[in-house]
Length: 419
Image (tube, rainbow, N blue to C red; front, side):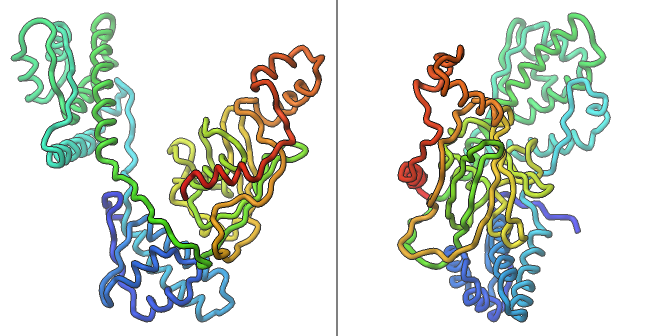
């Protein structure tokens, strides 16, 4: 079945029977309080309204409970509700279709008119939405010289509206305020002719293409910063024993004696876990990261992850029996961390999570070259006679104690995250 596309953040309704609602409230010991409140507040007979991300999260709680209950009848009922939620996730999507990216002059770009029309249609909708929301168009001042205008009019198939604007312009350099749709139309027109031209004509067309590209970048950034929904500030919650806590051990691979931390956290996304690892280990958020869970890769960067790390939850991994996976930080130095989900525990009353409960040894310095180079680094700083000793010590700030670990300092850093 083809997925229906909805805007990110749109709520989707799912009807649950009174018995199913009661079962959720009574049986899900780890259910997030916000979801519990939504279930309670939704009138009987009305669909429960949640975003796709929330439904995916909600399903994770159901799967975790179904996976652990010894009651087979309860398990079957929970699985039935889970299938309903899965039906919602299979029916809708809030992810944009993947676009084929064309290089300037690519023959396929000229021929694949369906893709071009789809992109131009999307651009028109975005531009109209911006004008309706703000009351003004988002434009970019594209400056063209007389030779550039003449070349565009002579060699490209511009839309009639752009042809008329460029033709009516006065001699000499002229600035045209172009919107997103017009910039994209100009970009596609240029892409169709660049490969067939040479010499000075191609150089001029490339110069125009660079200006158009700069305009597209500027306009799209403005759209993104203004249209992205603001994150809701979570209301502080009273200390409660309700909900599951996951105990994890994180160790850096390839270092002996090992550098490791043991933490406890309530259910969270892998992107949030990335933050916790950075803070507890002592990294500085200076590089990209990815999680490797079996054959699946999770990241915030589409080129690095098959799946989005903000949508993958610890509870879901635990329910699937995933007890170990890898966290990779800094693809140059390639710091691999073994993450072990040791156990699921009930939250303790009046305990603030996340927290670090144990650990050993200092985190290697950023950009120190990975596990193999770190061994050399330690060898150098321990040997005052080594020719690199003074330079390395100066680079690291004058001193470095590989055995240093301050549990209180780590927990203070976790408190500052405000979550």
